Image 1 (cartoon, rainbow, N blue to C red):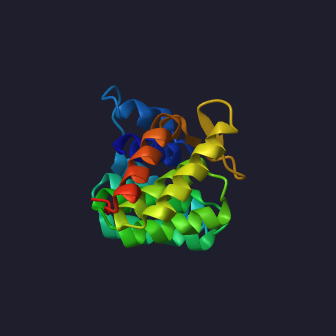
Image 2 (image 1 turned 180 degrees about the vertical axis):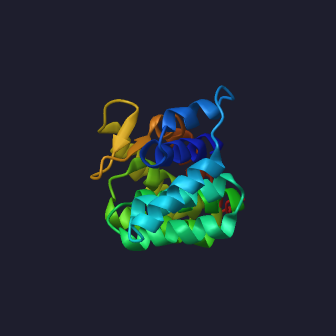
Image 3 (image 1 turned 135 degrees about the vertical axis):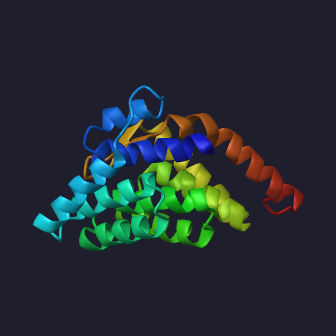
Length: 194
């Protein structure tokens, strides 16, 4: 599951962080990102265009990287409100909430993202995981199966939504069968998820 969170965060960054290749490399300790400088760029962008979802998203990602949870959430919520047709803002919020273990908020933003683009296999897989954690096993199993079916119809390691945002789906391919088996066994035994 940690791989999925990392894949989701990288997908968010590919679209919304200038020099994302630097960020991806920073994840492997090759190059560092100056998050204060990135935040300053975003704040300047917001000053020039206060209704820019892009710049609010940038600010949210930078605040998150700097450890300011409340401001990160505020900026990403603003980005989502300014451009509700772009699910990437909701997935960025999801990544933050997931790290904090905030299941109710995770569910809400995933539902928002899936409402815009229900064909996102990574979104469906992550939603299934949240449902599993909440103990909604039958619903979780349905979503895991939907994610598996969606990813089976796609070629390559990436899904692109209608806005062109890329999502790494290789981990969905790798983990879907084991997730389906795990939840199926829990349902058969009458147990709840841990």
